[in-house]
Length: 441
Ligand code: SAH
Ligand code: SF4
Ligand code: F3S
Image (cartoon, rainbow, N blue to C red):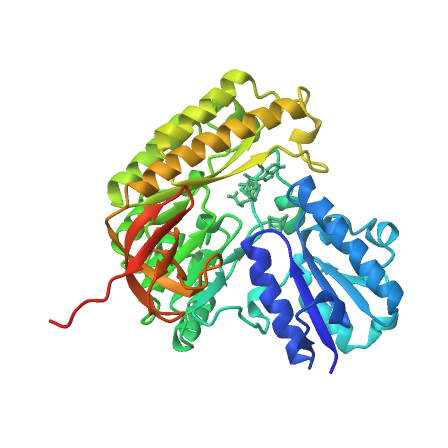
């Protein structure tokens, strides 16, 4: 049997797409090779969000080249966002690549292999009509957790971001298709679903009027599906986070008390240059409304430092936003100029050493606030979905709370079960605890 190996870079949408790539390859009779070295077909599902993503990929492509030089029968396919954005230059730059495909044409990897057009090296998926990866066969990594794609593409025009160029305009999946998938997953034993979209809460806007459903309504429908105990979604955009969505989060029992709400900056001036369409005040009032309506909410975010023209004062505003919003966690990024984005050609690019200094200060503040917030949970009991053994200590189990914090804990629960865990210790990113086994009444 021929064997494949898939390496995934980038965001959760790529993780979702890789499960489809694997599913499709298995339907074609290939088996998984745990190591790259043992694979007849090497697939890289790539990301291009920041320059760093590309340098990591270049290292992998170098390794794949060495493997191909040793055994020219091997095939190398490159999918995802880097492939899409580089389609003109990919084969020139990396002659070791046999086949490439964008995120909207994953099915074509299967078609290419099936047609045994493997001789047609240096070919690219048609890039014709984009198809939902969600509709392809899949192989899920965890039996009890699943991604559910609700839309593809993004209609925003954030001036730093390459995603709209790569993934195109937003197309929403009809609600019945999303719900049918959620029901099938529940029947299959899935307990936690994460609804995915580049701008997940702009879901539905592009659907024809007769079948238009808002994201809040979709969330409520998912909540009514029996068997699904936890619903998450990512990433929402602050501009579309309205009161109906906050109400749905507050009222739906299975929707978790966590929102990942990317702020990007705390300076209204920079937010405007980023074309985020909200300002500092609007973000903070939204955060306050969410915290008020959803007790126990964990609020996490994405932040960028060193956007062109960001002054020391703008950066101080980001620091003070972190304090005021009291984020439970944040992904922090150094601004990275991307091909053909508006921001890449702005004057006043911030020098590297200034970016470095700012990100260090930002990380320190984020960690200190997150640590404080996590330590406030010591003594409480949290519901944890068990994911398996702890990564750092085999005698412990690992899982996540509804607020999406990782917990390492002593206990006897099995992967996929919900356990009650008493929190005993905390860092800025993880909790420590022990399972509470309720005594029979
Ligand atoms: N669609 C999602 C996430 C997009 S990418 C959203 O809008 O919420 C994830 C994060 O990468 C973004 O939130 C942003 O913080 C960061 N990012 C995107 N482009 C970037 C760039 N050019 N440089 C640095 N960080 C970037
Ligand atoms: Fe990029 Fe903005 Fe779209 Fe997010 S909303 S994917 S940051 S353009
Ligand atoms: Fe990267 Fe594409 Fe996701 S650029 S972050 S893999 S949408």
